[in-house]
Image (cartoon, rainbow, N blue to C red; front, top):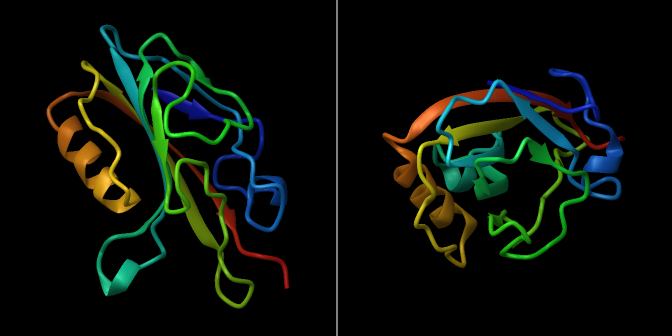
Length: 160
């Protein structure tokens, strides 16, 4: 599988438009070379530089699960809401919405990682009130069902 966006190059700087320093809208994402028999996708955007509550857990910027297996991407500006029109669900540390990058200006660039998983099933996971609990449940549920995976990464830190 391959995950791409025209919003910024893989490994490049994420434009302010997609961050907490700008409009905070989600970038358009496209995936290709999908494995046969894919029933659904999970998109996981996270910031591995954050050590949440002094643990190994990082920041959940966006988790979208049960994206239909026929989907080839997500449009720019996915609307807020726990359930999307296609039946997929979303959550982040900010609620049922995309949470753009927000690394502080005083620190290093953070590596925002987008991961797409192709699954052989839909997941029977209801969102918890906490994004981290939901992510744990989704990641547990997808074990043994991953047909393919792709990763895309962007860098960001707030302007000085």
